[in-house]
Image 1: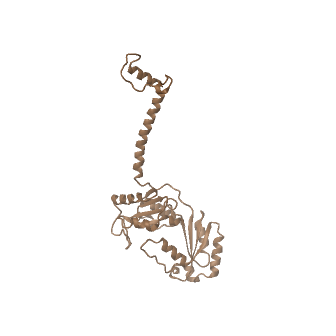
Image 2: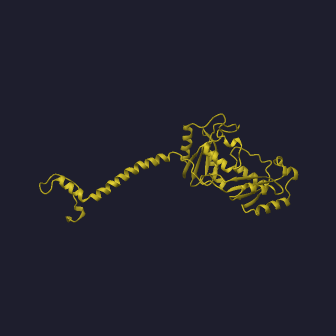
Image 3: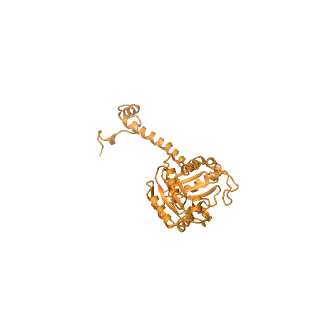
Length: 306
């Protein structure tokens, strides 16, 4: 069946030889173009968008092969509290309250717990025995190292809301049987990454450190670490933190540190932070990066959220 002149399928899209009847091919082409100006505009725009997306897509692909800088924030204002009790151990030697009063008694513990629960800045208060403290320290210690577990005292742990932390600490230190109090802000990366892979710093004096005797990694070594990170399953985002941001992070968490060490970046590393859809076991991550030139340590950031 031959299509009617009104049927869109009858449009002439091929400008062939002149038949001798009607307009010349060039004239027919001009008429068709005028009649379909809107169509041609749309097609031209589509081509431009596709071409642009190709350039932009390649740019995004190139960017995906580079780690991102740390995000601007947020910087946590909440924190964690550790209240250590006098226990008659070497741990107490440097604390006047323990030398004068001896180990914390059961009555002291009751007063400490009651005092902590009366402070509105604190929540999730719990007691930690020496056995629990040893187990937690073993779990979070770097593989291949054995933490000193001899003098770990009993402690209370709590979450801390924003407020006047100096005044809070003074109130806690006044409780009987308390040896010392530590208040730290939550880590910057705790809600942003699952694993951290720190690279060798400019200098390292620790005798067991894999970076002893060498400096920061070369660009090739950093690229090899990054490529291995990208090969992990379920990688969402990879960040690279420089020593200056590392120092800013330390000052935020250890908010009362004012010594010269707080201004020294020579011993601070660059660190890759990785966000994963499903974090693998810590032992698996350690084995993947074990022995890589330029790698200092692998941290399970997700463990701090538990």
